[in-house]
Length: 305
Ligand code: PLP
Image (tube, rainbow, N blue to C red; front, side, top):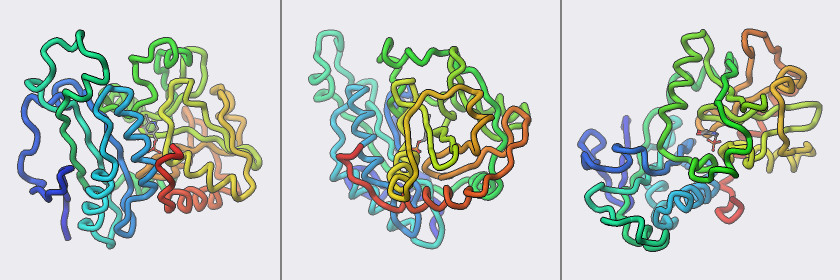
C-alpha cells in the first residue's frame, strides 16, 4: 500500500520522497500561494467541485493565474485513484506563485491581469494518510478553547489585502493558536473577534445547532467559506432543516444544543467541552454527522461555489 502519492499538474507521477520545490519557491519563502485539503474516500475526492470552485476564488484574490480546472480535476482524480479504496486519504492541492527569480521585475507597473499572465506557478497534488487525531475527533468529539483573533468582524471588508476569505498557504498563526490551546489541554480552538463574535477554527468552520436550525457566521465577518459547512447546508436543507448565515456571539455557543467544528478531513467534530465546560451530546448528533457524510459524498458543482 502506498504511503504518499504525488502528481504534478502536467499529469506526471512523481516520487514523493524526492525533492520537488525550488529553494526560492514563493510558497516556501512567503507562504504566497493557495491550497485545498480534500478527503479521499473509496478512491474518490469528496466534494471536489466545491473545492475547485474555492481554489479558483482564492487564486483570484491573490492575482494568481486562473487555475486550469480541467487539469486540476484530472490530477486529483489520478492521485485519488492511485491512493486506492482501502483507506481514507488527505489530499492537498498546492498552487504557489512559483520561483522568486521568475517574478516580474517591477510588479508595481503591471496590472493584476498582467501579473497573473507573467506568473509561472507551482502546482501539484499530494495525498498522505489521514492524521490519527481525526479518528478520535470524529468518534469522541473535541475539547475547545476560545481564543481572541484580535480582529474586528469588519476587517475583511475594510482591508481586503488581509485575504481573510481566501485559503492561503500562510497558516503559521493558525498553527500557533492550536499549539497554544494544546498547552492549555484543549484539542482545538474557536477564534473570536474583538466584538466577541464567533469566527472560525484555525482549520474549521463553526456551526451551531438549535432545535432544527443550523447557524454559521457569514463570510463577510472574515471567515473562510467552508466546503464541509456548505455541503451540510445543502443536505440539511433538503432534510427540512433551517440553515442560516448569522453573526453569533460567544454566549450562543453555550445556549445552543450543540456546537460543531466542520472541516474536509475530520468532517464533523462535536465540541464536547468549551473553555472547560462540559457539553453533552444532543439526541440528533448522529443525524448531523450523517448529513455531513452524505453532503460531502456529492461532488457538488464548481459553479455553485
Ligand atoms: N476555516 C479555516 C481557516 C480552514 O482552514 C478550514 C479548513 O481547512 C475551514 C474553515 C473549513 O473548510 P473546509 O470545510 O472547506 O475544509
